[in-house]
Image (cartoon, rainbow, N blue to C red; front, side, top):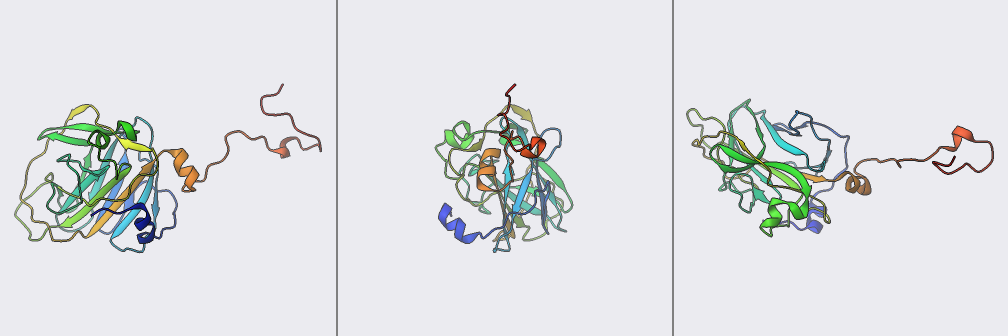
Length: 249
């Protein structure tokens, strides 16, 4: 199911909160980190929908990133993860459905998802780039570029054993504004996984949407408070006369 930008403005009444590094909830924690473990600045927004959560993230051009998720609950969960409207395991268009491929996390387990899964033991890296250079754009699937989405599906019936990595799915979100940031199909790297048995509940317990944009876009929207780069304050030399322009000698 797709949401138009206008509809989302009605569905989500939000007030931007202070920037954070870890997006924490009752069921999961979500952090977007670079390869050194540094978290990208995230700005959560409050929502009227209890199980749908929204946040902004400041994207950094050409930076590789990882989606780090920690299962805070006491049971296994299935995670449908989509980037720019594409399921990160199958690469197909995603609606965050429980029938899509998903990753599985045990209770108290944490995992990082670093790229598009192109095989059992390999992924191609996520990195921030222009929307026109994104993986989704190559498939002409541009409606949700600029969105990282996670749908959490608790296990329907507890199964014996079970580790991480399986399929997961998500439901599509709002389009990224203007010609902004997207996620590219980066270098291949080793990333082992294995298939496990998992029966997801019919409905997701929560859905999380991270809208990532370049800093200038976040400044323009007022999501972050940006000061002018160089302005000389009159207090420095306030003698009642006009001050020379910056750089004047």
